[in-house]
Amino acid sequence: MGYKTDESGWKVCKKSNDVVVSWRPSSEFPGNVYKGEGVISGSPEKVWECLKPVPNGMRVKWDNNVKRFELVEQITEHISVCRTVTPSAAMGIIAPRDFVDVILIKQYEDGTISSNATNVSHPSCPPQSGYVRGFNHPCGCICVPISGEPNKTQVFSFFQTDLGGFLPRSVVDSFFPSSMAEFYSNLAKAVKSLKDL
Image (cartoon, rainbow, N blue to C red; front, side, top):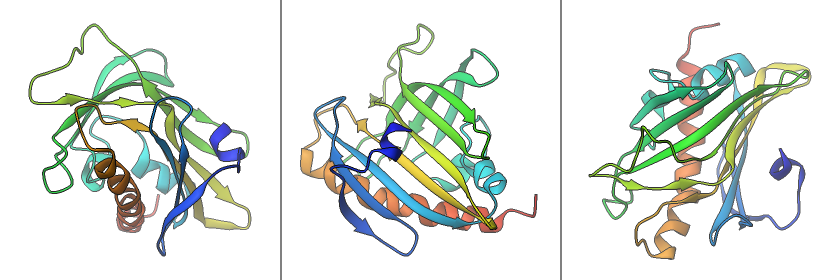
């Protein structure tokens, strides 16, 4: 939520019909934090149905960067530890990754719903062969209702990911803006394909 309210230092790096992507240096690791901001046609409930981080959820169907999503441990109703597996990307330059995160889902009185995550070590999920272990620094998605527009949702997304391995910085910096623009256009299509909730 702090990234959403702090407007300072963001530089726009990609704009499309669906999203504006900005970045600034991360204070968490020697990389960048990326912010996506766009309006999706669909109620917050529908958008959340497509975004929510749950095993066998819709996310693995439409998000090209999520190949598998596994529950490692359910801690409380709203807090879980999950493993996300990503496919290879950037024409094979980026090998398959996996990420282990603690995820908090939070609902606010104004109808905003957020999914908030950061990397964590878990004894039952050590690094596995065939995957480079990456690390998500504080990141997430925030679905905000738009007053007077019940069938539209403002979606903020924040990514600050250490992809691990030995990737050239230029590859990482070119991957995220285009990948986030694709995230928004695929999310919009997924929401559109949902039957009325």
